[in-house]
Each structure stands twice: as structure tokens, then as C-alpha cells.
Length: 195
Image 1: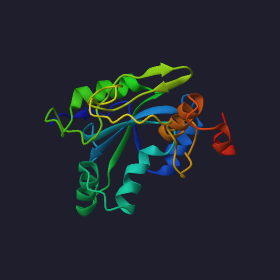
Image 2: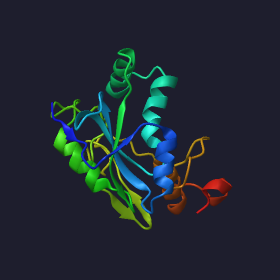
Image 3: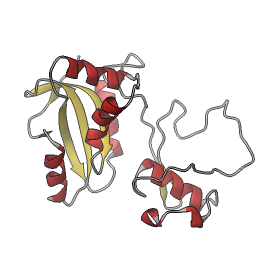
């Protein structure tokens, strides 16, 4: 199992600490790692992600509030069951989404699901591309293309009842894309997610 060097990296112990760090920085995007305890100069990561808000804590919240059965959730429960806490490390801060750094770390540590490594990430990185002003990025076996068995319907994409947390979230970008491509009428946007 590969180790990650924590030298010059930020160990996040609480949500308040994370919020204070983000408030003090111009760069609000970051790459993070969830690692097995204990915190030390070298830790063993089990998940890599990017965020620009509190997402670093979303995985543990998911583990507390659902009966989800992913490898990531099972690893979090194993850590808790041993009486320990997940070690949360911020690798780097960025002024825009750091897809490239996330990809580097995923490639370095490999994915448990495909036998290339130790990360419990369910999705595989695929480079992003732009459609108009919207950056699209998919984690999929087929990259940014639809799978060959995708059944095309001659209908526009529509969104469900749930509102995105922000227009910069994946959900928010999906709604923006639907709106730009006329799949979603503008009047369906909430005031909090206006373009």
C-alpha cells in the first residue's frame, strides 16, 4: 500500500478549522485526501477528491446518515468502529477546479475497484471539456462519451425536484447545462441558483 507524505500539508481536524482556512484564502478550490489513522508524516489514503466548500466532511456525514454500502463508507465505519477518526488532509489550494491534481493523485494511488491500487473512489477520472461556458466532466468508463448501450430518447433533459446546493456544484452545472441547451426552461431555476 502506498503512503502519502503529509509534510507541508494541512491536517483538518474540524469543520470550523476548514471554514477558517477557506475564509483566509483567495483560492477556494482544494484537493483533499481521506486517510487511515493515525496522523503521521506518512499516511495511507483511501479516498481523493476536490471541493470548494465543506465537501471534505460530506463523506462522513453520508456514512452517519445512510445505509450505503460503498467501499468508502465501509472504510469510514471500520475506522470509527476501531475508536479512531478519519484523517483529513488538504493536499493543495487552487483558484479554479484542480481536476489535474486530483487525476495525478488517483493515478499515483490507483483504484481498489479495478485492482490498480488502494483508493475507494467509485468514479474514474476523465478529462473535462467545455460546451459553451459550461465545463463538463464525467467520471466514467467511456470518458465524456455516452456508453454504447445508452438508449437515446428524443426528449430534452429535465431535472428533478431537488435544488442544487450552488450553481458551481456538479448538480448546479448539470442544471446550467440543461438550461443553456434548452433542456430546462429558465423559469425553473430557483433564485438561489440564478445564472
